[in-house]
Image (cartoon, rainbow, N blue to C red; front, side, top):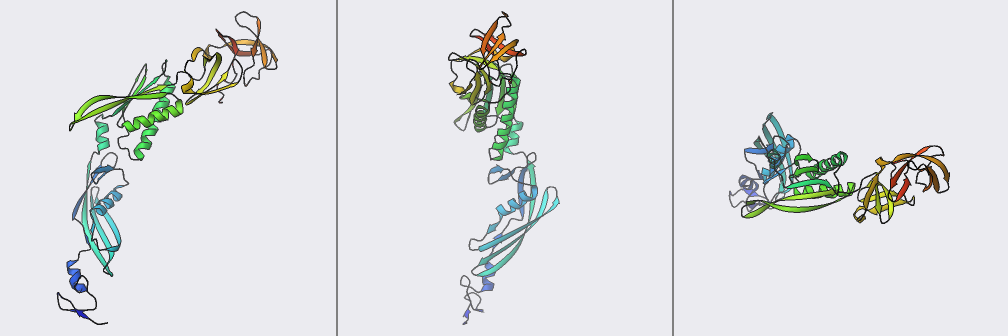
Length: 353
């Protein structure tokens, strides 16, 4: 193969690299550059890392150091097939020495470069933790019930749903998904959350699991850089009727067994199952509760009917045999007295339809 002269140094070469010989080319070509000192900003509480003007949740400290180096490492844009190996060595809890090896192809030539850097870990507070500590919130979630007071069990269930949803949203990247505070009152509970997005997701999850509906309203809170800043209030209303409630709906007397997005129950008038979307129970009226039931002596069972001794008049009356009925004559069964008459209740009040 014929040789040519390097225009820069005059040496003979078989190939030119950017119009110079290989030696001249390598003298002026820098494969990679890395600052001698780097800083990794981390949150002392949650371990988040400040990266590209944004706090991000990442892994352990070694991974944070490696990512800090990788972000600061500059590779020549003419390099191909680049391979990078970062080897951090922890000197103290907040100080690392790092060796970086870079291999790449440039102008058909295999090049290698070693670099050294120091990474100093600076611990502070991320946006999420500092806002949590300062009591920051964007939305207020008010848990109430329609035409009644929510039970302690319902409040606890809503709080569990809230905590689970906040954890899931945080893991998905919503760094403002956190609970700042909560307060209980005789009317229900108020939860203060850092993210309006979290409030909406929580309300939807409560509606799906426990039923009910919610509304949202905005209140002007402050001004920032010429813009109005609002706080949102989310009013979550749990269903009006609970398990064990006995209602009158379109002339039918129904014992509620389960109330969520759908309401399930048993018609005490016909003994059949009852199922409807909870939102469709408009006009229903609470007339009694299973806890108001009294015992009555079962006289006889005849087909779909039973005969009991009325606990008030002591007269024998014929009632519709309820579902899941297995009692025999002479035993006592629960009955409920309403303006619509006397009804026998299913024996298994916890039966899931």
